Length: 80
Image (cartoon, rainbow, N blue to C red):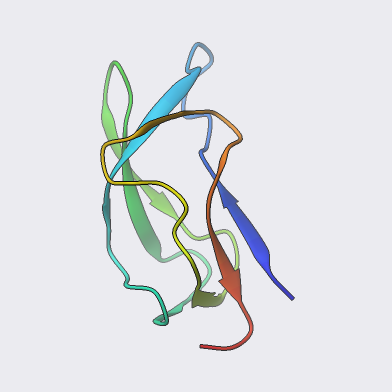
């Protein structure tokens, strides 16, 4: 089963953000609560934790690419 990773809303006024780095590579295992990636908004750069455990699957956005809140940016899967 796949778990969608979406661009989080990190503030009330945040409408879009950009992933500035992934701390795991596709195929690596991620534990729930582990910092998975960093996001830059117009005000701040923050670390984002994984909301589920699994293997990081395909990453859907380029580093630095701005996307709206709620856009799928990657997924976690049961298998590597």
